[in-house]
Image 1 (tube, rainbow, N blue to C red):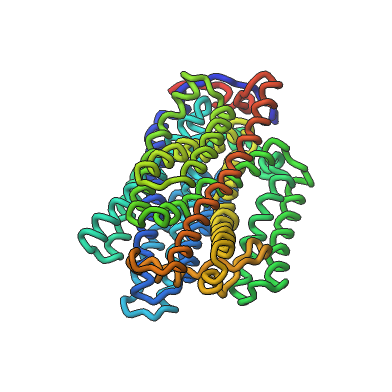
Image 2 (spheres, helix red, strand yellow; image 1 turned 60 degrees about the horizontal axis):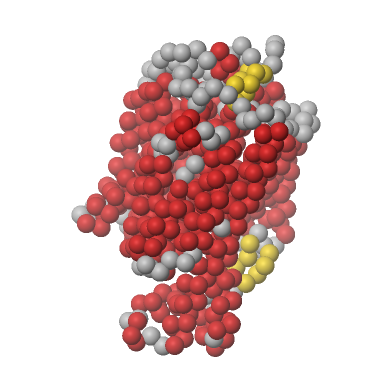
Length: 546
């Protein structure tokens, strides 16, 4: 069977199926569910802590289940999508969403902390599994439906994520803060868009990817990923399983969790090596996977802290408003990617390179905010930069590696999410602890001794540092500003300066991405320019209109 490829630089709205726009909207609604649920769950975390007496660590574990569950859903979904079809995966995701609602909403009002934790943790995990499975469907499906304009349509598809964040935050504010609805009534609203995407997908015929259309084997689809690509995935999974082992064994610094985590990662790497007959893989895909690990950290990892950081520098309510504003900017701009590519003439690589430079500048601007208006302008710059990262990276991968079918872009989504969970969020938290402690210890050693946390922070088990005690900081912030002691003032100021320094350090990541994209730009320029690649004899190469 021929696996020859042909280059294509045409940009058009040609779709390969008459129901393409309906399927696009169905995918939009599916990812919207994730955004709405994620936003509402974040807003009611405080209610859970108050009702069931959770510690901050327990709430963090419940929230973390929403990242890890997604990773497994998107990767496993992508691995099997080309073999079993998209339809069964949509059904599985729908059932997972319904099951997650049941598990979460049946938690008894008088449940003990331990019992409530189990309900809410596994409810969040099932919700994330469903979301990841749907993204494992939606990404390759849209890439297949619009083979000559993937950047545009994948950006439209992923406009649904910030739309869901805005909608969920608005509902949480209206129904929770203003109308005082019970948290179960608020959270249960995500079932409405679940029914919506279920109805849109119902009875629809979905096309096969180019790889599936050519009848490529699973091993052939994995060939370009190879051992290079698998190393990145297995490393992140090793970190994840190390964390799980630390939690289960209660051994935060011992060698056993590390051996377990890296043992699992090593076994998975060997499986991929055997499956691909020890294929090294495509170096370009390896670079894209590496870059997307940074994208996950910059976008999702930063988002997980940005609301708290801006709320700490300004006020918590202003931080909430700024989060909604940033999400709205992203939603609006993701409809512009096609115009930028088609009418301004930027290739996907050029768009990514410029976006990275803007994101770097934006984070540095945000680090210097002092007023609400200034913060809104600075975050608008940052939002402009990060808007195009995730969907455009998926488009480049689908354009250049059609032989991987749904696998490569699904793995890429998992890499981004896992990187945010095990590197991005923890890394920024560690940086904030380190910088705030350095500032206060330098400015007032006596105050540092008072506000120093007894619990050390590390990053991947290294660089132990004692940050500031958040409980004592919270108590200091609760004091009327005119009545604060000099030590309280300096502790609060050090915490804020630590936030600013964290953002400046974070800006090094999009700066690194900009360098990577510049090298890719020069690589493609040397080869005659960026072009999409299609398998010969497939719908992508033929470009048939509907």
